[in-house]
Image (tube, rainbow, N blue to C red; front, side, top):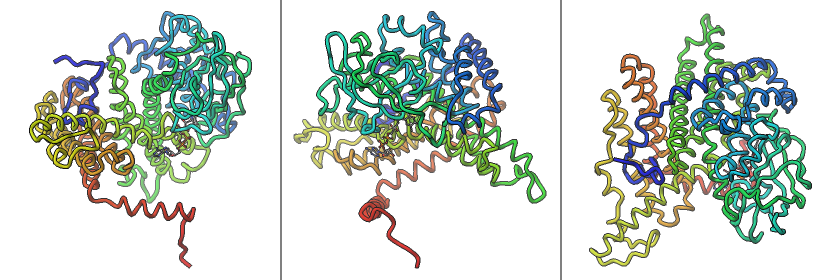
Length: 582
Ligand SMILES: Cc1cc2nc3c(=O)[nH]c(=O)nc-3n(C[C@H](O)[C@H](O)[C@H](O)COP(=O)(O)OP(=O)(O)OC[C@H]3O[C@@H](n4cnc5c(N)ncnc54)[C@H](O)[C@@H]3O)c2cc1C
């Protein structure tokens, strides 16, 4: 069967009880030629970043990367990772780029975000939607790092609600006049190339946003001081201000008025970079804390021999492997030219950033008091890790996005089912949210549960038990979506507790599917005997996922949501906690 890559999405199909296994099997494998180029790039990255191994702590304290180091990054080609070879870049696809950022993040979070903000988001609008003229003009400066790139969307009044930005771009002849302020812009203070989002329609209306290329050299542009941050302190984060900045109309990226779509396209496409970064940080923590635990003796033996230490390390290994599988899969989807991978990319960001946070936290715990000391890197890694759950879409917003996108598809399906019942029961159905009670009872997604595509048919026999866990989870997902929709109808958008549960089920299932695919590839290529550790990882993950999905599913009808809301409202009313023990 051929897959229509313009519309196919594993997760969206899954919510309609279809396991589109051809999208995720076989697991993406990098061609040898790509591997060769990537390996030499990784070597160069290692060489540069190892030579500064003793500097990252000082740079973190100072809150700045020294200009001489940024020059070294330019010289080694760090800013040309994704720029096409014909312009002197490495032309990395999503898989190679993600792996390269993993390597950078193994060393330092601030360096990784500097490279990531340039390639993942700062210049990605040009890469994805730029005209040939724009590319000819800017690639040569971006590839050398003469121009470092930044992505300017957030404003003081517009964070998660990015559509409400107030920066304006007013047409004036064949140019635009830009006015407004952007906040917390990574690379703000060192960039020469800004991708700026501004309103080209009425200021009091949402939408009508356009993306522009803005050069640092344009008159009227200024940046604030580097923000004093919790983590990734050495990276540049500043305000970027526009005071009647004249931008040629030829600098519009994509279509006028379609800038929100451009922004979302950039963020989706760039997520494999952030995902790679989370894997890099996790690998470093696992390396550091296993060595430290082996060297540390308490109660007459190495603490690495204690069960509670092993428990932490074992879970770190499972989460790192699962994240790596998911991030590699999403990058593979991009490289195979699937168009619809937004939900999958959001899942990789949410899972990766949270797994990295848990790993950094538990790694620090293994190091004990040393972990809390600045002489050791654990506390810096923990501080650096925290932001990944906030920027490039908070994990809360991404959870809503993941579940509501799926629910939208399910509701469409229900609508179709309802329409097909219309003739039979002669029941007027006006659409989702206003389905008559009777039709709602009839129009069930669960009718699809035993369809042909409700099973994994192409996994190797040793993986069948884990495929079974996935298939059972899929049925729970379908039942969950069905029940949530019946219960809340069009009110679903307001029911965030329920939406989050559905998102968590989807995240778990996708990560499991990616890990099944990866281990399946290994079992098929090297045999099950040589894949015992990977099979153990899969076994643990599958059992965890099975338990979590079951628990989330159970909470749809049996939960404390209203009580929790009532307690939150009480705290909001009093603006604090109401009790004391004396
Ligand atoms: C170090 C750093 C670097 C950054 N780099 C960049 C950059 O390069 N370019 C750029 O444009 N931006 C950048 N940002 C901004 C970042 O993307 C935003 O901080 C992020 O989008 C969240 O916006 P906010 O901070 O205004 O939080 P808010 O949107 O105010 O959210 C506050 C809290 O409310 C929650 N929330 C909001 N709306 C809802 C809802 N509907 N339902 C449930 N919960 C909700 C959020 O999840 C969050 O927990 C950076 C931020 C930092 C801290």
